[in-house]
Image (cartoon, rainbow, N blue to C red; front, side, top):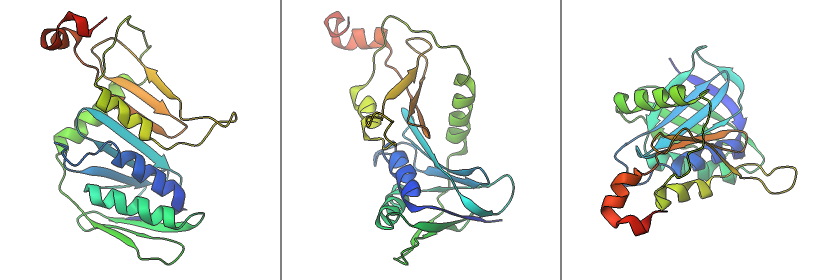
Length: 213
């Protein structure tokens, strides 16, 4: 069973780019996830320490009501980003064929972006889905102190999102539960993610108390 839909090329590019920022070359997770359904396109990237997920609206969807999911490598996300950006204000057609791969045909008739399906680690993706489900909807609390890996936190600065009415935008909104729980992040109307905080007790053992407040 396959699925296809038409979507704004720049929206596809943004979603692919944002997910790619959370899927580094040395990631222990070897695939990114691409989901296409009547509600839209969702692309998720992770290395197991931080998660980046973005979505894009679709039109003229054809496929099963439950949608179609496949997994691809880093290069596939980069190719989708490039093809979408080159198409500028155009609309392209994205098709997903589980067991085969994906293909995006941009509206400018440029070279299609194609990718082969990669076998995923199902346990990792079940865990990520469970993480979002468990964290969303919980009442946030703000602990006095939370520590982050600065490298992981910097990934969120790369996220592309529409600017707000004030011309600014890209504010990073965190939902904090405690100093050791994964933290939900939103940037703009479509991007959401997760970042793992650092265990401050372990960090103090490694760098000494002068490295913490």
